[in-house]
Structure formats: structure tokens, C-alpha cells
Image 1 (cartoon, rainbow, N blue to C red):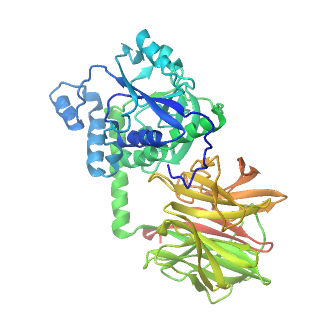
Image 2 (tube, rainbow, N blue to C red):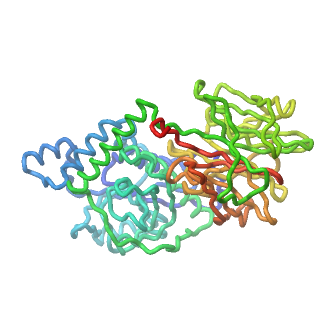
Image 3 (tube, rainbow, N blue to C red):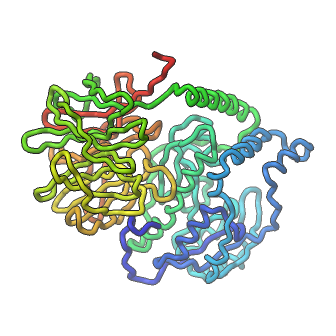
Length: 563
């Protein structure tokens, strides 16, 4: 885990005793990373490994399965599924490395290894009484299931806080498997993931961690799983940290009625439909790429009034020069003037810079000036005032940092004041002062996953003092509301946080959330309202306003065939 992102857990007792359940000593890379985090942690101890000693049937490669099907030795009903997997893995081999087996012998060298031959009853597995006795005598706090089949019986009660298990999918709607596929098949924009405590009820686990990401790819299952499994890696340590510090686990209350359908490996008929859609989409993508049919074009629009819930409003377009797009608007008032700062992205240079112009209710005043340009992409110019100086926190993910710039000649000249975080991929960092504390919100990609899925919070006594990670980090793990969409504002004595809903596409609409609690120890927010792009636009993702102006950025997908 990245120590910059998580609060220090005070050691007040002996470490949690953790056991893991494996089928072999060469689990996939994503599991290897989780075991590695447990092994090096000072709040838990990897004390026991339950190793499946069931007679192993050598797992056939997908190619071998093809041959068996052609020879009539295997069921032909899933032939197209195995063909799809084979082709997908061949084309996206780099992303498939997350499932490559790695040896964990060094990581578990100090643990007791207990080999178990479970009793199989159909799809279920029970443990012998002697194995149950051994495991109970280990006095484990937690067991984590990375192997075996569906567990039943007394094994579920062998550790104080149960057996934890992943389900890579939204368990309210996508039960069964294969993970990540049926979301693609049904064109569901969301792909969920949960960590749960297993119970005797099939698919009735007690959820202790839930996250939602976008279905990042509707063509490649490997691509979709890459984000899904990478993002899930820190879930175990997050829950172990919470358990160690608070000595309890928050069990999710069911909010929706479960879908009863259990998904299984797709048959040839289902795959044939999927292949037809796949071929159409791939041909469409190739044409768009070859002829540059579609290009997302962002532009700014404004209203000559304050409007926090713009609906059916006709925004006045602010035209940008040819070859550039303007986005990420931030209004800032100084010396009785209003300035509009924004990202000015050049298609030729393939990077953004920060530009600025004075603005009134009649529009922007020329000239538009470049005020910050680096050798990497900069955007999202979040401004604030501290003491008597003006500061700017732009997005500097290209530098793998969160940096603060100070105005040397406002608004035209800025220089780097301090890098408050380094070595992280953070986007759209947003700062706010509340009750004598400064809070920093930032969407951070921790394990090569999406930057739109999770929001981290930090606090400090001032912007240049030490930033302390919030104990609830990440405070949001949901692509529908994590990534920031503009300055946090006060309305009727309440704080509101604009965020992006990136479930269907990047910046599809703005989700405004009311912050009901924010402190050193707690954070809560509730949904307030959406701001839809409207007027034939395809997205919007940044809101800014003053008492007399409202500015949004809008996305428009240009199609040369529609002109």
C-alpha cells in the first residue's frame, strides 16, 4: 500500500492473526500482491496457510480445450467461449500478466502450512473434523479465501471474524460468473466488486467492502478485468486496518432486492450473438480511427447569472481557436474583477496548459493569455487564497505529483511553490478550508486502475504543512461520484461537492453531493442532484460560478459523416 494515502494506525495490541486459503503456491499476480501486503504489514501477521491437497487435475490450456472439443472429448457447447478467451488473451497479453502465476514461498516462509483434502459434495466442500480442530487451534482473527470451491460447514466459523472472499461483480445483480463478462454482454456501464464474509447461504455473504467502476471495455474481457482486479487489490488491507484500529467490521445493509439469476459460462448461442456485436463494434472503431470520424470536443459555455441547478438553460458558447479545446473552467475574483482560468488543450502538442481571461456577463475579454505551461500536461486549475497570496493546484498527473503554484504577478505569472505529494497518479485535486482545517480531495490511481473510481481525502492545518491521510481513505469508491468536478462550494450554510459521473463515459454528467460531515475522523456525503449536459451535448464535467456568472464545460462528439 502507498503510505502517503493511508493514515498511520497506532499499534495498541498484538497483530491480527491472518490465515489464507490457497489451491497451490503459485497464485495469480493480483493475489500475490495482496499476500505481499499482508506479509510486510505491522498490524497483521500471516500465521497460517491452508493448502488444498485435493488430487490436482492438470489444468488444460485453452488451446488444449479446443483440440479436445474438435476430437469430441469435451463438450462442444462452450466452444466459442474458449475461442474468445484464447483470442482475447493472445491480443491483450500484456494486460493478462495480472493473472500470471507467481511463487509465494518466500512470503509465507514463517507461516504454518496445513494441507487439507476437503470432502466434496457436488460444488460444495466440507472440512474433516481433524482439520477443523487444527485450524481452530491457530486462533485466527481472519481467514481469506483465495482457493477451494464453495465452502460449507464448520470451516466458516474457524476464525473470529470469518472467512473473507472476493466476488468480482456486483453481487446484487451479477451472481455466478465468468467475472466481468456478463456486464459486457448486457452492456451494463457498471462493473462492481465486493469483499464479503462467507456464510452458509449461497451468494449470501456479508459485504464488508463494495466498489463500483465503469465497464471499461465492451470488446476485451482482459481489458475489463485488468481494471477490476487491480482496483480490488487493496481491499483486504483496508478492511484489516479498519478491523485492527476499531475492532469491528461494518457490515453493509442490503439496499436493493437481489436478482435471482445465477450466471454461468456462456454457451455457443450466447457467444454467437456476442461475436456479432463484437465484429460490428471492431469494424466501427476501425473506421472511426482510420477516418477520424469521432473526436470528443470540449467547449465552454456560460450563463450571465448564478445557477446552481441549470436545467434546460441555453448556455452561451465561448469559442476556442481551431486546433484547441477549452475545458475545466474555474472562476476567480480579485480586485473587483472576475477571471476565468481553464485548461487549454492543443491537439498538435497533445498536452494542456492553463490559460486565463477576464470575464464579465458579456463574455470573456481578450486577450486570452497562457499563464502556466509545463513540459507535461496541466489542467483543472483549482485556485485558492492563503493569507495574502493567490495559489493554484492544477492537475499534474503527468509529473506524478500534486503541486501548488504561487502567483508572482497575478494572474499572468505563476511558479512552483511546493510539491505536496510525489510519486502518485492523482487527478482533479480540489482544496477547501472548513472550520480552521484545510481539506484536499484527490482522485488517485493506486494499482494501475482507473483514476475515476476512488476519491482520497487529506487534511492539514495549512496548505504547506504536513498533509495527513484521512482514516476513511478512500472516502468514495464509486465511479459514479468519485472524481471531482469543480470547486467545493457553500450554499445555505451547507458544503456541496461537485463530482463526475464517469460510469457511461468520461465526464458524462455532473453529480452534486451534499457534505453532511467532514472532520479529521469522519466523512459523509449524500446525493443532491445531477447536472445533465443537455442541448445535444454528450457530457459535462466541471462547474464553476460567481454571484453573476455560471460556467460549464461541455463535451460534443464530432462526427464527419453528420456534417
